[in-house]
Length: 491
Ligand code: GAP
Image 1 (cartoon, helix red, strand yellow):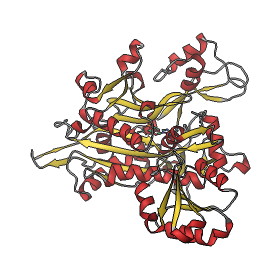
Image 2 (cartoon, helix red, strand yellow):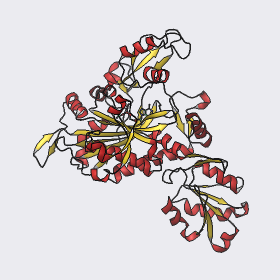
Image 3 (tube, protein in one colour):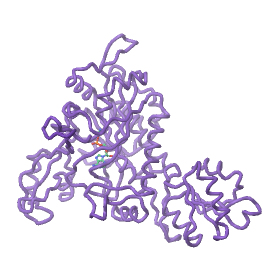
Image 4 (tube, helix red, strand yellow):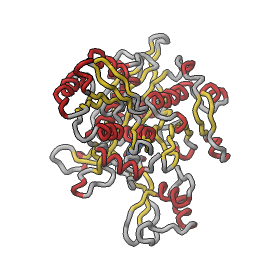
């Protein structure tokens, strides 16, 4: 696996990701996606939407606004609680995020430490500013929301925020969506969109940015009916589990089936288990290595203010096991808060029992697009010494470009262009005439193009082309009349 720095260099060289506005030296925590990056990102989002919305009868989609009524953030608790602790250097004033700094300096897990505990650790270990080595001031909380003014006003009543998560409008608009989509419990609402966090120390390339996208799902249930009708579909699925208990006793994570994790009470609810397995399977279905993942339970101290239980799907990045997807049980916290602050009724009428109730969010799979982007790239990246180039073994479903269309010699460019024109209506292709055929194959490998089609002199006679598979380099002769269907079925 490459290091995160090597991957960032590769991404820039191949046109996946650039630091934003690099001609002005960039802006920390912000990135621009190049020609290949925008395709990969769109493909990830499309696959997520397909499996989480289009292929399910029990989930409806929506798209809320990025800036909304500030009362939403008061109700959700973000205005008061969405904070990280920050260390400030007493001499040069440099600001550092306290938990990640302590974690790196002391090689310990520090999530959920209080301000006093952080100050104690800093004093005890004589930790100093990473830039000028001077001492730190007392740790301070720092709210991560970006604020802005709405309309041509300066007064505080015009103040609002860029959303720090997509979740909240799925609660605020809950009743409208449920009624319009004619949903009955249990059901979910899904959304993909931008989120913004003024991170104190953005780091590790796309892993922690200030502007990113989330793919989130709120799954609502009747609290009196906790059973998951789909649990048998995932009971035999196994994955690495790292429970709160294992973390306390210093045990390693271990592989378990979902059935075992439920039987032993490691995962408390069937729905939580079902969604954890489903998200893990989603990554595997798109070519990620399932053994690079584990689920980790939050220890009591690190749970968010809204969560009764949280599990993260973690991935083993080159810089350690880190959160890829968070999945909290938010119970009825958010709906109750919005009922209280808006004074509107957000309960549902349950036909069978003739009662009104406020549903519970039993699981909220929440995944950052950029972190998923990194995971798929890390697992696809192969430095092939024999070929002498990188081979990006992305699933054809995610590959930015599906087909490279080449001519063996330039004389055949007109014939080749006809093949490209035939395919481009249904598949994103490139028509590449630059350099030797070997050079073009190498370029295609590095861009993750799963199939290359070459037109040669025989094509004029046998009306067939050579199709080369990226991962095996196996070549096959395919009739022009079958070519489109052949490639579509394999992509
Ligand atoms: N609605 C719940 C929520 O937002 P979270 O654990 O704070 O939960 C969910 O965020 C996911 O969003 C994370 O697991 C991660 O994939 C992504 N994410 C959060 N902060 C991020 C950041 N600064 N940069 C990139 N992705 C981030």
